[in-house]
Length: 115
Length: 153
Image 1: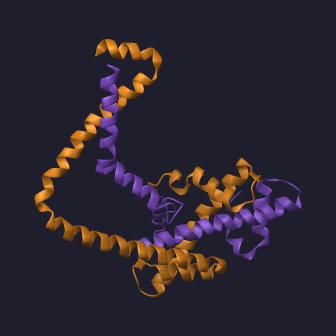
Image 2: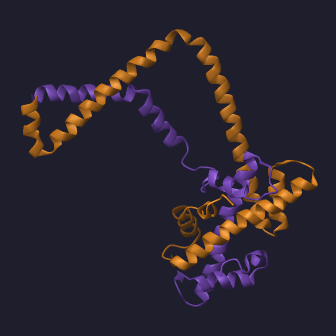
Image 3: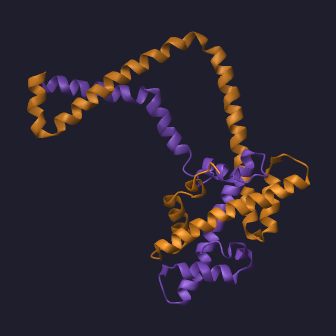
């Protein structure tokens, strides 16, 4: 019994690297550690299409909106952290976001949208 | 009108990851702050899209393109994003080109390998064998079930 099992283990170990699926999966994971967009592009595109004036959105425009949104999230979080630090806190709170929006002109478009 | 409200939300896990990566270690984010940032991100998508689309309309184009988004980001006074956006755009173009090249290459090799079509059947059979063996192996790892396996065999 044990002998037969051992034989099978050796067989399967020898087979596995040769199966095309396992190989392509491994190399796929290794080649792309960083994807172009952290946010889901299908969702971003769906949101863009909510604009009735948008007829067609190219793939590159969806990617760039997605990337810009990612950078925007970072910028807002960093600015909020400045306010949290002024209050000697290590936790970002809603009021830090509100203060950030009041402080920076580029965030002014958000006024009244988060209440 | 048919759109559901969750269409406007971005996935929480991704938002949290982006925020955490932007902040020093040990900084926490309250639930209210995170949901405010998430909502702000959704507003940003809609606002940036609208701005970009205005540039497309001005150019009498029906399709929103990359330059429209770049122009919108500039107009929205987020010039500090431009370098990274252009990098992403380049990376995207390169990826598209690589995909195209790979597809052409595959097409060419496929034409040369028509005779080897039968070889794809064999590995899949091997795979079935391997998976049943693997299942047997994991069972035998648990000592209690080891005996049961022997009896069945």
